[in-house]
Length: 477
Image 1 (cartoon, rainbow, N blue to C red):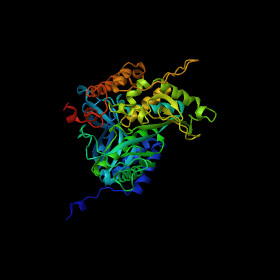
Image 2: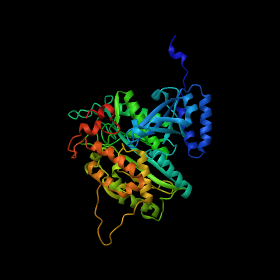
Image 3: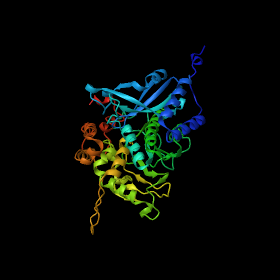
Image 4: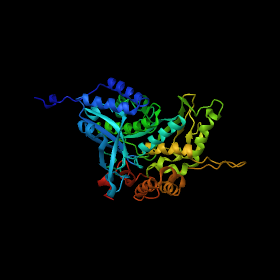
C-alpha cells in the first residue's frame, strides 16, 4: 500500500487560494486584529488537514527567517513562543538570548502546496523581549507601532509598492559556490523584449507570478528586465506592512521556484559587471480618507506641499541614510551612472539618474518613486527610515541666487558607513543601540572586501553578503 495514501494534508487549487488570500488581505486592513485571532484560531482547530504553521521574521540586516511550529503546539503556546535570539545576526547577545515571537494573526496566508509542501499556512511574527515589550531591533514591529501612531494621531496611512529586480543564474546555490574567475552563468541572453516564450527565464517568471497571484499579491505585470536573464514582477499598491511582507515572500518564492528548476534567483544588486544591476524602486505615498495627500492639481508636477516637504527632507538626509538603502558591499557597484544608476541626490519627473522620480499621477495615484534602493535592503528598516526621515527630518535649504550643486550618493560602503556613523539624525530615529549594531555588521562585511571595488565582482562581496552567507561561509574567512 502506498504510504502517501495514509496522508491527508491540505492542498488548495491556485484559483481558490487566490480568493482566500485576497479576502484575508482585505480583512487584515479593515478588521479588529483580536477578532481575526479568534477566527483563525478556531479555523486552525477545526481544519484537521493543516499540520504546521510557518512563522516568519526578519533580522536587522534584512535576512528572512522561518520557523515551523506544530499546529497543536502553536495553538497551546501562542502566548509564550520563545527562541534563542543570540543565534540570529543582529539580535541579542549570548548573555541575554531569550526573545519572544508575537504572532501577527492578521498576516495569515495559505501557501501553494506544490512550492511549500501540503498542510501549511504562514504568518508573520514580531519580536518581543523577555518582558513582552517590542524588541528594538525588530523593525517590522517598530514600523507597525509607528504606523499605528500615525493613524491614531493624524488618520494618515502610508502606501507602498516595490519593483524588485533580480537575476536568474545557472546552478543551485550559485552564490555560495561563486568563483570570481568564472563569474555567474546567465541562463539566457534575452532581456526586456528579447526573451523567447517558454525559455527558462519565461518559465521561471510564469511559475513565480502564478504563485504570487495565488498568495494574494495582485500582480500587475511580469516580465524580463533590461539586462539578460533579469526579471521583475510588479504587485499592486498596498498598506506598508503588507508591502514589506510581500517583498520578503516575493524573494522567497523566486528562490524556491529557481531552486526547483535547478537554478538560483539572486538579489545581489550587481552580480555581473558590464550590464544593468538590480534595484528595488519604491513607490510611496501618504493617504488620508482614501485620498493621496501627495496630490495637488495646482502644485508643481501635480504634487502637494506635503509631498515636496517630504522629498526635501529625504534628499537632505540622503547621504547618511544611504547605508540603509544600499546595505551591502555589492550594492555600490549598482550606483554606476553608465547603467541608469539613480545616484544623483535630486528629484525629477523624467531623469532616471535621479534618486527620486515623480511618476505621472492623479488624485488616487500621486506618489514618489525612490529609485536608489537595492533589492537586498531590509524593507521594514528601509520604510521605517523613509517615513521618519520624510516626516521628521530637516528640509533641504536652498541658497538664494546660487546654482544648486549636484550631489551624489556615496560611491562605496566605506564612505556610506562614515556618513551613517557620524549622523546624529540616524541615532535619533534608530536609537544608539541599533545604530551601533547595524554599523558593526556592515563594517564587518566591508572589512572582508577591498575598499576599492575594482572592475570585477569579488568572491568576498558575494559569499559574505548578508542574504548569502551562513555560519560555515562566514567562519571560513
